[in-house]
Each structure stands twice: as structure tokens, then as C-alpha cells.
Image 1 (cartoon, each protein chain N blue to C red):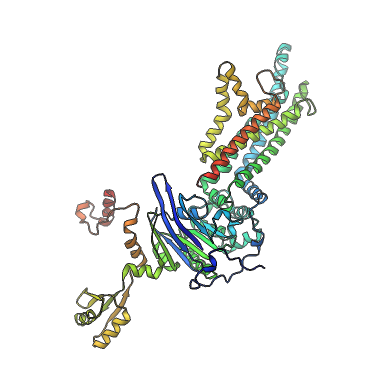
Image 2: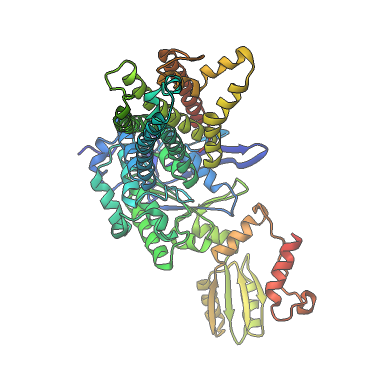
Length: 330
Length: 291
């Protein structure tokens, strides 16, 4: 369990983390979401005592990180940048880290096997791909077989296979009862990996809720309905409380406030045939954009959705030119 | 196996958030603990697992011994073509003649010690190191101890080799001294200690400045520029030179004290004070600063 209480970090006049209070529970993967510069990495660095909070505190299992006599056996950490000397082999790197607290050599071999780096254990880390570097970081985090894992952007640079591997690993580690705290700016990835979300923007807490609730809170329950008697169905549905229907085409309606199941039942009772009934969940991505819109640190400016090709002067690539132009104005 | 310890706050974790601790803690958890001797072992692994370290130390050895033989050979050559008056005036420091290579190992060891810490800052390794040892000071002091001992031993061995080779050459014309002669052992040990001091100051500067380039510039400035400046100071101010690292080292390796130089013991104290101040400042910042 990780607990932040009024956690604040200021660099000069800039506040990187602003009065964050949250709890990360064991047994599930908790996603730590936010746009770049939202204070995720700073929060994680404070959790392991690398940065000192300006105010408030963050504890692991009720203890400050520096009070652990064998910290690697309590908290495993993967930091965003490769925190590894590039001139050393993967094996020697892990060995040197393990030796600081008497973690046996055999454990180094175990974690190398766990992340699939056994074959390249003797190679210098400088020659590793980003994906291999991430695997080494996971190995380093798992070295002490800790109860708590703090991982900053672990899927960065991984190929699809690697991403799936890490997703499965994190979920199985959580199922063992460990506390898994994973930061990411990739919402779609978090939707698949995490159960719970802590969302930050500009250093402030924006949301602390389950992934399901997060999506629901942003999207409402939107159901897309197709029927040859669309307008009649709309009348029927409108009689329900807290329901809003919008005709989106000759045969299509968007329904807010009713579940797909309920709409199906109502249509059946009214004798209206249904050709399609699709719950439309806003993607986590959209939900995230929606919720953090005011909290992005570096606003790129609105990208105009349609720019006349003539206006940009480059008829053959209007979309790309449009993006460039709008960024230039931001 | 002991039962899983439950930390404060964990006991009240809601049962709804997944199964709580079906896992046994790893067997090594019982003995795992950060200790000074373990951090020393870790730093030794770090030191010996970088190819650049090994090559630099090897180069320092070869250059020290190489010059330790070459300069005496030149000296012997010069001796043959000198008048008796010249012979009496020059050729008074046979020991130093075979130790000039030490100037190179001083640079090699100094820069290596800088890299020992700035290499960790530039690669991000420092965050792993300080994350594993959150009290931080053991990391700095283990580095200082491991590399201090390593560079002292290596310097002493190479200085010894340079001495024997150089003196054997000087013996051809009867200039050589033997290891049992007065001051000789002190000079050889003093030379090795001076090189070690420069290394430790490199470690301190690297910790304070963190960037490799800046730290190396500062160290070379301290070794080579500061003595020039103190040499230019007028009158009594010139004696400031006695108290800079270069002056302290000079006191340790001088046999014939012909000018304003401290006694060997004084030189040792000067160097020890520099080490203490340097590492003290490094310790203060490494603990205070965000990593």
C-alpha cells in the first residue's frame, strides 16, 4: 500500500506536485495517469526518497522509504530513464545492486530468466534496445521480490509482444497480493492493464476511481440504436426518466441514460424492430482528454479539424500542414 | 519460515481489492539488510565491472613504469656528457627521476575517480544506487574507500616497479639509490598517497559538480593551474603553495628540501585535510540534494 498525504513538490516558483492525496491498494494494478509534465515521475521519485517533498509525505506500508533496512525487498522501482550504467553488463549491474543488501546471486539469475534476458546477461547494457532496457529495469525492480512495485512508464519502447508480456506480468503480480503502481500517458494501455486509476494534471489530483467509473463518468451511457421505426422508438424511450434521445440519422438514434438491455426490452414491449443496439463507450483516451483538458501543461492549441487546402499553400498534404500551422500559432 | 509481516495500515486493507497475500516472502528477506560491508562489496563489483576502469588503471601502470625507466635512461645519457661541476649541481633527485610517470597516473586516477560518480549521474545509475541505499552516505564512502584503496595499491605497485627499473638504470653510473636508503620508502608511499588524494578529490568534485566535463576541468585546474597561481604570488604569499594539494604532495616526495616545503608529516596533514574537506562537502550535498 502506498499513501500520499498532501504531497507537494516545488521547484522554485513552479509547483510540480500540488497537494496530492491518494492511496494505492494492494491486489490490483493501479494506473497513474497524466499528460507529460503532470508530476507523475516526481511523485514516484518522492516515493522512493530520491526527491524530498516540499510539503506532505508519501509512505509505503506506512513507512518512509528511507526507513526500510532492505528497501529493495520492500519496494521495486523502475524509473522512466534507464537508470543503469551503460558500460556494465546486465548481470554485473544486477549483481552490484543485489549486493548492497545481501540479495543472493541466485536471485540475479532468477530475475534475468523472469524477464528473458538470460542469453544477453553478459552483454553491455549500452548495446541494449529500449525494450531490453525496460526488461532489465523490471528485473532490477523484481530483484528483492518486493511487495510493492513502482513502475514509471514500463511499456515505453516495448514492442506489442513486450507490452502484452508486461501486462500479463503486472496482473499476475497484483493477483499475488502485491501493490502495483504504474504510470503511463498511454490511456489505451492503462485501460487494458489497470483496474484502478489515479489521474493527475498539473500536479493536482483529477480523479481517483476504477477504470470503469472513469470511463463512465466521462461518457455517460451512450447507446447507438438502429431501427426502421427510429422516430417512434425515440418517442417511446423519451417517456423514460432521465433519458435523452437524439436522432442521428433516418434510422439511427443516440440514447443517453438507458442501458442497451433496457432499450431492447422497451422496444420489444412497443413492438418496434431493432436492427442494431450498440453500447458506445467513450475510449479511455477520450475520457482522459475530456477530464484533463484544462490540466495539460503545454497546450498545443486547438488543431483545426478542417483547413482548406488552399489556405496552407500545399495542396497535397493539407492535414499535416494544418497541424504544423496550428502548432506554430500556439 | 516466519509469517508475513503486516505493516501499519495494511491490516485494514479492504478485502474487496483482490486476494491479500497468498504469497510467501522470499527466503532471503530474512537476512536482507543494507550494511556497510555489503555496499563496499557492491562498489567493488561496480569498479571492476567497467572495462574503461580496467583499461585506465592499466594505462596508468604502464605509463608510470615506462617513464620511470625512460627518464633515468635519459639522465644516464646526460650524465656522460656533463662536466663534474654540472654533475654536482644537477642529478640531486635520483628518486624523483624514476617517479615522474606518477604525474600521469595522477591524471588517470583523478579522472577515473571523477567518472566513478559522474558516470552514475550521466547514465542515471545514481538513482538506482541511491534507491538501493536511501541513506546515501554509505554509497559515497564505500566508493571513496574502495577506490581509495584500489588506487593506492595500484599506484604503489607501479611506483615501486618504476623505482626498481629506474634505479637499476641509474646504478650504471653510480647514481642509483636503494630502497633501504633514507627517505626512499617514505617517498614511494608518499607518491602513492598523493595520487590517491587526487583521486579522492576527483570523487568529491564529481559528486559536487555532477557533470563529467565540469568536474574534470575543476580537478585539472586544482592540480595544474592553482600551483602556477600560487607560484606567482609575491613575497610571503608564495608560502600558500605549501597548503594546496600540490604543495602537500611535494612535501611527501621531496628528499632534499631546498626551498619552502613542509616536512613530510605536514604534507600528509595537508592532504588529509583536503580529503576531509572535499569528501565532507560531497557528503553534505549528496544527502541534501534531490537525485
